Image 1 (tube, rainbow over the protein chains, first blue to last red):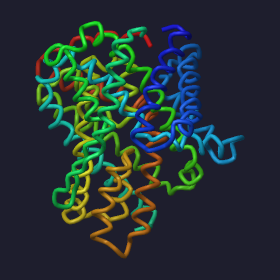
Image 2 (cartoon, rainbow over the protein chains, first blue to last red):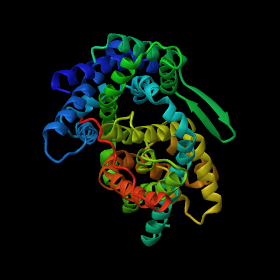
Image 3 (cartoon, rainbow over the protein chains, first blue to last red):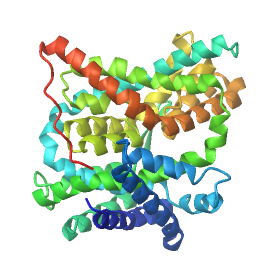
Length: 148
Length: 268
């Protein structure tokens, strides 16, 4: 995807997100626009960084890191950026993504139906694995530090 | 991408999904949460040829090529959620930082079970992490969400979104009443990178140990923010490679041969 196409797609998705944000979070249209613009620019810069910088680091990592850096307290303008992006609901941004995903999944519905119950079962194992392993490590370290 | 029909369908899906809104069903100590995103997903599936046939093959293919970019806007918001809390994270106890490696427990437990259940490359997506938003973005970027790996991560993501709250609420109370683990450690473990799952687990713990409420909440929230920050890097550099390696090992044990090489995802 070239830069022009990437910008177009980010623009389209931002407009979709504007709808879900206004309907989903009760934020006004005008209130939502600056935040979405900021997020769109962060996304674009991250994707370009992943494409043109060496190291093969995924765009998602660049985008998260960039978003994090510019909102750290003390970064120039961070308060203002934070004020604007706060108007954009996290869950509202998920709605357009899953709408596209739903249409895309139609293509592989048979595969999904075949593996669906297994994946649901696996989800339980995944949750238990993460939780218990984290708890055991935390227990060991807190104990060794004498904090419990 | 200049597929006007696709975008018109998506827009309609978004509007309907948001108008349906969020519904929660309370069951015992937990809640099942149905968010607009879930309705958007289900309605999206309904538009495809098997059902209403509004979206044809062209729309389905175009939609899957766009998901990668749509996720980036969410990742930008994710970063801006973590940023303002960064000073607090950096001041956290070393126990908080190290317990993050517990997220790799997912891989150790998840991969063998996945292979046992007969999952193939879905394993890589489903068992490499707890499948929250950054992991979905990562798998989407590396393999495409319409790949086997993508199906795996999406499946766990959706399951977590709908049932995660109730599951974490129950799991925390069961762990607290049966395992010899201190409530502080259980609170730290609750921060898996999802605010709703963390709150549910914390809710159970606070109900059992009300005199520790403040400390438990602080540990849970700090750990959750930390997961938001390092979860992605952990997956890129440790979780995913470890999952691939373990998948090969267990596949060999079960089927006697090495798995077929993954299909190369579309270059991002």
